Amino acid sequence: MTTHHIAGARGPAPATASAPLSKGLTAPSDDVDTLQRSLSHPHAFTGIFDSYFFELHRYVARRLGTDAADDIVADTFLVAFKSRHRFDADRGTVRAWLYGIVTNHIRRRNRQEVRAYRALSRIGIPLDTESHEDRVTALVSAQSVGHRLARALAALSRGDRDVLLLVALAELNYDEVAQSLGIPYGTVCSRLSRARRKVRKALGETDPTSSED
Image (cartoon, rainbow, N blue to C red; front, side, top):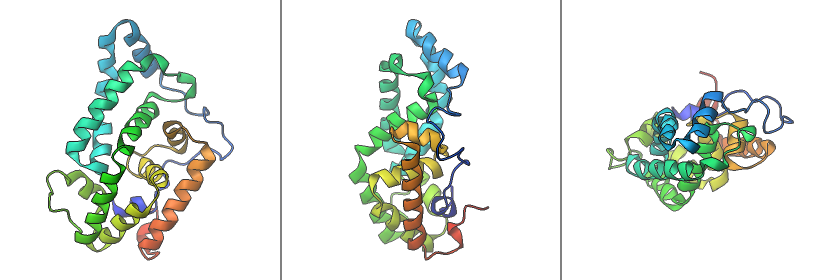
């Protein structure tokens, strides 16, 4: 994921702004079947783990580094396992449900994330390249732009940053973001628009703000 994907993040094309949360958001039957089966056969939950572990780990590593991702994703699946009986397939996908849990864990480290972005804005490439490798790959496509991008991400509100990165890094669609964060579809649109506007301004309204490849 390059700088231009962050700045111009639009994600998969949304349906319509008036679309209900559940429209086009029905959980895949195999995920639902696996989750339901795990209620009586707990070992079946490994199917959910196997399907989403690496995706979630990659997303968290891009935001907080691989060390934090190890802990956060482990905690996410523990919470998901314990609360699997509360999953409602009519409200959305298992994928979005898991991203909601992982986002709650990331928010507990909001200060850590902001500090990391501020440090990156000062030095460009983190000194601890091993633990931050994924975030460097995701957020810094050009060192000259990386300073400004990191500074802009640090300045965003937590809610705006969550929406922007769920779209740009996790590649969730707007409905999935709404379900993950427990907010209306329209709020997703307004937060994403505001975040993109601030990031584009930080990058000098240059071409990288485009979402076109």
